[in-house]
Image 1 (cartoon, helix red, strand yellow):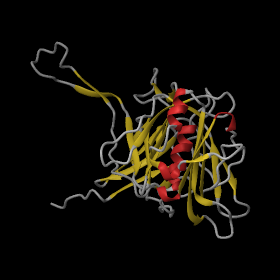
Image 2 (tube, helix red, strand yellow):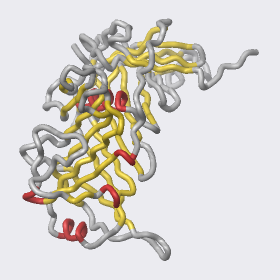
Image 3 (cartoon, one colour):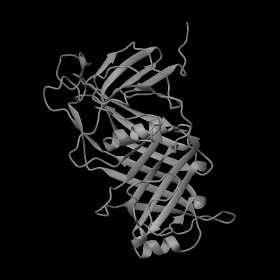
Image 4 (cartoon, one colour):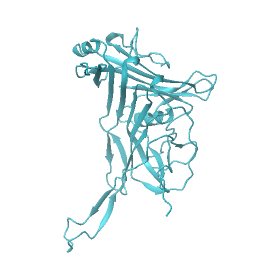
Length: 356
């Protein structure tokens, strides 16, 4: 027999066009869809509810019937060496959208935003996956969570959890061309921290420069061993009645944001921040060396700003004989009453994500 190969798979998402209504199909073309590249194995969970009659009296020792009562769809999207398109698309989906600004007349854009207001709709989109020669279209997909992370000397990583309505159909549409973008690495990432009354978040962010201080913030980049930022919608599945066995919507629950850092130990500065319960702000700025458009001013990359957090646990130095001491920051991200809980800005050559 001719075996099927695991490398022969494709994944396409309508990141540039949201569904007109939840669970609706999006026109499949290169304007609306993008074929993903450099991701982990596409291994979706058809999270169906399947029932049988083994627990009922049927006159048989064994089950006699089985049926699918509810359809489901979930999968984890990961890029071990992330590119801007996927990062921006997943954050836009999780936040509820981003606002684009063009770099003059050049084909280069920055996409800025923060989590949607309570009660605002989160965009839904379509996913088309092909593996083992089997191709299906899935409607009603939303980004439940997105995590961006990095380690010293390594790449920026992306992971996201996507949940669909369960609507699925056999599909044979050709996949659109993949987007050509550079990968992002820790060597392009600068990290700053500011404290207390010196925290000041710029209304307009500048790539490659700090945007969180009224003075001179602490440059933490050389000390950072690893970092991670995660945003979670914690969707509640709305099935209701009359939904034809699929979700009728996904509604955010109580949303959450996480931030983690492991840094080289330097002195008692961070311990004092814990003891004094000092308000802190952090900026992650990943600016690739490649201009998006020749003659323009935007570079591929992203910025994440956390306007306020505090250390939840004393960051004591860790390590044994022969080790360089490190500190783990256990962090509580907080509402400062003025700024969004997190601010994101991504840069690439795409004009818009989840357009109407």
